[in-house]
Length: 219
View 1 (cartoon, helix red, strand yellow):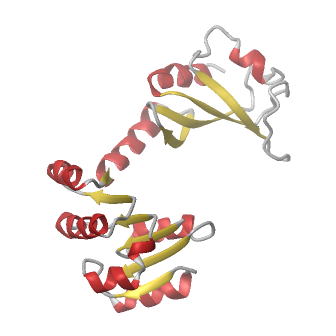
View 2: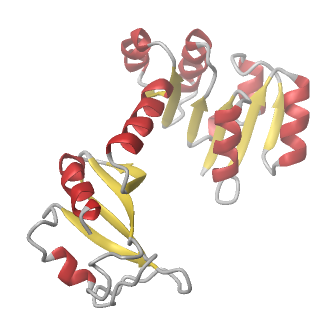
View 3: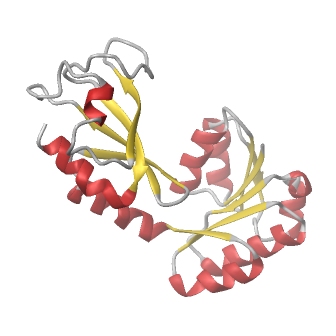
């Protein structure tokens, strides 16, 4: 995909790091020093202009973009950038949002929103409330991808994935989709015997997350 990112900051740097190996990425920022550092540390195309201007977006090839992501901490600037992206017909326009009062405004122009503060709070709460699980991703229909570590003295050691899932206390709306072993590649073999320090990758309903955490807490 062709991805245009507006603004250079911690969030956008991480996005570039995750995207540049698999997609064509262009990033725009008006600060010359930030642009120089980004240019020297990544393979992304860097444009030194204000991202809320027509000329900057045109230089970035906005008419060819599949995705436009606006990452500024200034909601007003993000609104302008997203509005211009929709004007140019970008199929998917996504913006960081700092103030929840802006959510409706972004919805009116057809931009998707990600509440930066909400995401941080969600991750902290997940860490505190579900200490035996690590959330890897959110999926549609209120599902999550989670990782669980098999403890050194776990009673699950020696069990197969199938046996674990058939345990009466294992939440029925979660499934183990793979096992990651320290000395082996990831495997989807559900008949494999679990060993200490193995990690289980699970997909299931967020509603049963507490049940799943309880299951691994008692392992």
